[in-house]
Image (cartoon, rainbow, N blue to C red; front, side, top):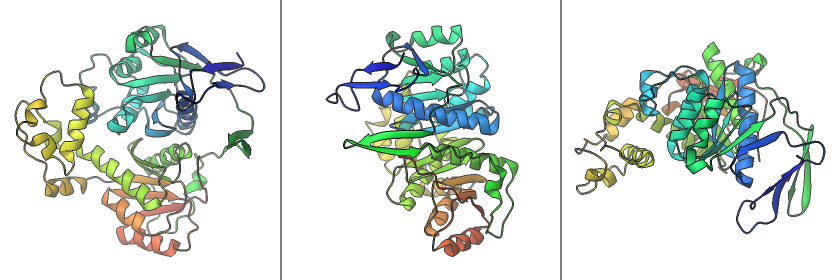
Amino acid sequence: MKELALKYGCNPNQKPSRIYMTEGELPIEVLNGRPGYINFLDALNGWQLVKELKEATGMPAATSFKHVSPAGAAIGLPLTDTLRKIYFVDDVQIPLSPLACAYARARGADRMSSYGDFIALSDTCDAATATLIKREVSDGVIAPGYTEEALEILREKRKGTYYFIKIDPDYVPAPVEHKQVFGITFEQGRNEIKLNDPALFENIPTANKTFTEEAKRDLMIALITLKYTQSNSVCYVKDGQAIGIGAGQQSRIHCTRLAGNKADIWWLRQHPKVMSLPFVEKIRRADRDNTIDIYISDDYMDVLADGEWQKFFTECPEPLTREEKKEWIAQNTNVALGSDAFFPFGDNIERAHKSGVQYVAQAGGSVRDDHVIATCDKYGIAMAFTGIRLFHH
């Protein structure tokens, strides 16, 4: 198949729409449903991300994409009991495969942003992963293959209209890529830079020059994630998964703040008060996620006011005070931070430090590198200058 007609483009008024190959055949097969233009953008960007994560770490990987940027990305490390609970997979009766763990982490890092996502998996989708996917609001999934059991599970999702795409894992795109804007064709070489090279961490200008193997792994995950995130972007990673991604901001400090706030929310969801919230039975998953998000925020009274809390809880919980949140966030440590370009000022490091960042990988090359280095030294943060920019548009 050389081309596939689509219902419409980014918006319903944008017709005609299709994906096609100028040479050869499409490396994908739509097994179910009718994915759209944005679905394919998410699917193909997501596939590249998880394929690189698998190549770099040797572990199954998953990502949750929304509007051409990842909301989460992870490798398949086992889940702790705490993570199983905050990702709402603690009631799953079957054992979770490494791929299922990767998906639970990718989907669970930022559940608000992942709502209605497109999923990419590095490995054959198995029954455990399909079981987790079936429970969530999602548009579709792309993977190099599916077990028969997984296909049976996915066919039951969304009344049989759920999208699942099979991609040829051996497909290699042309080295030069093109896109059109306003009738004008742009051409560039594909970004084939490899981000699993130990040399990335050789230029360390900070006083602290120690990167643990886990920190190097997490920084590679951050950089690979950024390679497929709309710029400007930064990514916070801990224990093999992105915990905060700031995408598409014009100012880098706003990226750092946005991603840092997401990382803080991920950590706050593990607070005992949050984990013990007395939800009413059969609350919808999206309503529960939204309620947690508001409970953690400064607008907590929106769900705790009399007449409101009864909609969500069996009894009114105590608020999570600002002091309790600050104390809890201070306990988060060993977070890695990657940036798709240099940090222009030390304010980015100041904000990152508040979310437990102890390792940084960024391009370097700012006229204020000295200020950024001094801010890292102030907190004992180890920082590498990679010399690599990872803009993606």
